[in-house]
Image (cartoon, rainbow, N blue to C red; front, side, top):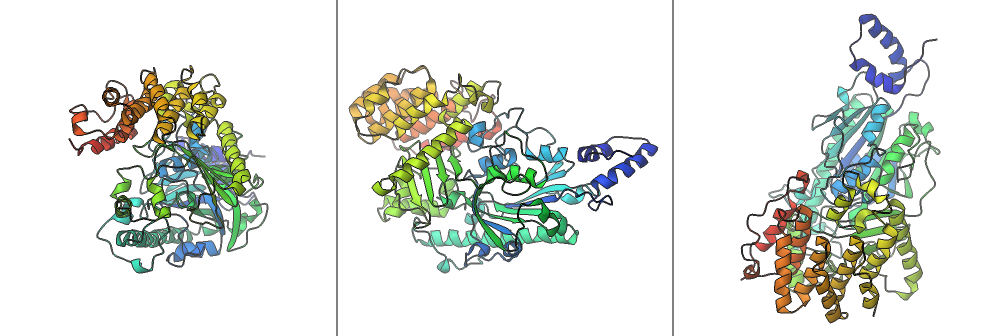
Length: 640
């Protein structure tokens, strides 16, 4: 009997030059294994089509939004399975896309910061690599924007012309089509042809009801309608090619809407996305339970689960290293109790928050409570809603729910998702919710420990510790990254209680830089909240000469903002020195400029010190090139 070739052999064989006799033999061998309709009766692997759209949550007709006009996606949902509770894990594109690509939490890879670039460990493979090994033709149309290094040839084609139609006859495909029409930048582009009436839009209670806000929300829905048209066009091509009955289709948004307090934030408005999965009748046998047309699932799912699910649907057991759970297919797992989210550096601004939700509650742990939600971001402030919202706050014209965004964050937030769908009533301080608060706080900590969350390290320090290794590898080395030692100090520092300053200062000379960094963060927070301010500033003064530049940045900020005038001058001078990447490095400079901005220096205090600074130093990827220039813009119009 002639041996049948594996699917991987099918994909590789034709690329080699072989004699005519060999080619004829190859055809006889390959066709039964690779053809969509095999005469031997073997079940061919399904094709996969991912339809993604940027910067949109479940503001779709099929999700009950009567203001939306999305007939094509609604029609897909009517014959598919619609997930009610899907999170993107990250509320911004590059980390969210990295989660999909790797099947790993970027916080465990060191890839959580918006626009970063880190090595992957050799045991982590990208899903196009795995599908290539199964014989698939893999295309991406067209954005990549990943936070990890990718090997050459990870896609058969990645461009705005990539299409399944370029594959070999009978070859299964995995095709991604990414619509950009609903991106944040599009909802503020003027002039614009209106589709939706701004007078009829529903304004969420955290936004002010201003004309600019209505216009941006209405234009967002206009873009969703345009995106729906693009989705319909791809689905029609699939139908025209006779592939609809052999292709599993996923439609999803890449994170919440591009409106401020949606994209970039760990509320449902930033993390919850639509997910519609269509399994043709011929592949229903791949499922543990058949899917009824138009059905819904309340299972908690998130982007980290997509890669295990794809492999499960393809009949492959997901590798043990993957951190998500398959929700469909042969290897589907039990329903999880929680899903998780993360927020770290957003463009030029450092921050760190973690989130967990179950079926009823959302918990957010803010590790930088000294910073407001609405910290100035150059890109976000180009949206009219952001500017008018901040102007109304400065004028004292907002209510409590609308003002919350512009004030310093609480250390913890807890929301009842059923009673409070917009998350504007923080229950963290309620006596009757303490058991829930402690349960979700512990769930967050255990998740961080389990995946070795690298967010507890300053970004530059993480790369230093990794050296030639992948950050993931460093994170699993207890000597380089003792997370169980660092976390309790970070928790103590950023969740202050009355009279705990003496306990915090015990760690100010700890040999671990990350421990001392969190002490410095805690001193800033206590000085800011006027809790034993004099002692906090005095202790911070001693840390302004710490060997770690990241510790010095936080310590100098504390002294400059809350210390004596002479001490302020010295602290600002130190921050200005660290702001030059030629003296330090790019990421130290970014940290120093962040702290310097919060000190609100005058132009006289700055002098000429920030002029002519380079955007980056050659040791870092060009993905970091925008950070320093965006921060420098903040100092251009300082008053004398």
